[in-house]
Length: 255
Image (cartoon, rainbow, N blue to C red; front, side, top):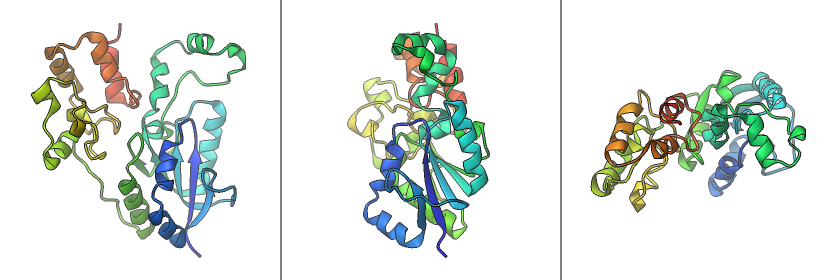
């Protein structure tokens, strides 16, 4: 029997699931290797667990999602979180440091009908996770490498360096040095192929903080470039604002 693959959605925009669909030809080859048992973005066919690999997109933002991820964990031999929402809480984690009730009252005409937690948290805050794929959205090549590696019982080979290394490897001019543009590259995990710096924009930190990220020093460099406290706060408050290293630096410049 072929291994079973399941893809699950929590609070998110579906972009990481679409990355899997964008694999196109590679997805057809993958479908010959595994049984896609659950993937509502692609098919209405659903098979019960257990599953060999579960890919989980999205953050946990409701009490129902807490229970659902626990059940998925029980049903899955390997659980892989995909994307900024699943690994860092996503852009919705910006509410973690604010009054959630005030947000609901400002956005919804009938906030009493909104059943949501006060925080948006990554999957790993609730269940053990076997592997994380970062990005907003994830990188197609990394996704295919991860699935292939796990099916073969080996560790996926993924970048373990900062975004700056990708820029250097590609010969991209440093936007901070050349144009005094604030860039999150020095503290951000590589993996996107330096999408933003290669077109003259600073990195947004979509892949989250690299290991031992020196966020305080980078914030000081932003200040030296002329960025005020609010700008620095917002630079650390993007789609991976819920990652502990970025959340702590954002809090230091809040208010």
